Image (tube, rainbow, N blue to C red; front, side, top):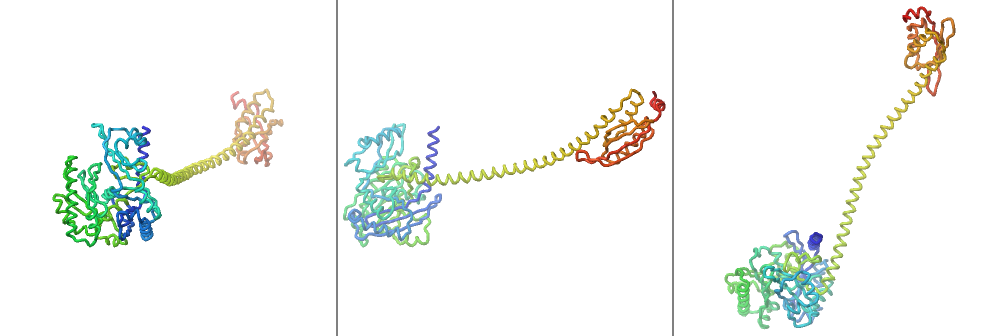
Length: 546
């Protein structure tokens, strides 16, 4: 489960890094230097940079014997075309590479890697003329056939001395090589720009025809087939001569097409595939359009086209004139294929394609590590910023929510505080009044009598006390009169008390003697004295039925 999760993560990072990486394609041949840069959006491609320079009086050894000329031309292109991308994909000629598809016993990735690390695999499967240390080697499993217990492995190698000639030119011009492809695979990658030429699983053939490189590449499934096509030095010289007689070219083409037909027929018979119906021509000769008729006549039943990689892509107006200045559009096939390359730092192409990711760069592992760290650092900063923004927004929203909750809580608290203060004020008022009113019983407790009449008088006085009146003293003054002292919250309560006393059965008359204002515990009351005349005892007993 853990391995699957890691693999999915690596696949995602691989795809993301491939999509984000920009490279400039650099195609160096003895007769020219070409540079191109593409931009992709989905399946749509746009040519953003294009530049080229021709080399006068070039030969097969010009790149090795006069590298300064190529450095100068490449530097001029970079400057005039405003190339700002420093990472470059570079190609080497097919003649400088060893390309084989090897059938081996089925091995796991771990077993295969161990065999590669110990060099036992190449010593047994590949017979090289020189020591392995003198080569830069690229390999990849194309397919595994578990039923036959076998697997097909693509082996590509080139001598370090041959590679250095191209890499040094690019580096001295100020670019950084990160991909080193073989010219035939660079042209094959240009098919990404002409998907209208590929139909499902149908085989397709590409031939390069010119003064320096002549070979056929047959594509079917994941396994490429590559074979050199022999042309004599005289024939190559004729192809490089712009003023050559067409009759001479027809003879060269006849010998060339005869070998192409033979190789295609052999391939079809060996691999039991359907006939090859499509052939693309990539050529460095300027008069290729004039000889297409001869090529087509020599290959009946096969549709032959000049490989025009610019046909389906967007070419801006400022580049269109430069692109159309070349009479032979197929001269851009290799550099356009290189421009589609991406630096695969996480192994994305390992799981996706067969021969799209050839990279013979000797220090490619170090380059990948550097670019991987740059990618992770760049995206690490982006992820950090995104996380910081996320947590910032989250904290802000959380703070807003908490602030709103706090505001609601404070509003509720303040409301409760007001209610609490009101309740406390009311309670203090009630306590004060209760304390004042509680004197009634204390006042009456001072009268000591064993007579039933006096008991009746006290009962009537207590029954007559209205709310808001508190008694402080009840004195019997003699001659059937009582003096009642107390406090009242209002004049009305005193009058009500006098009325209640007058209506009682034991008191015949009640009248107010004095009344004044008195403050008790910061509360204002009316202090009063009332004189009460008692009825005769007999009358009371009669009224009460005693």
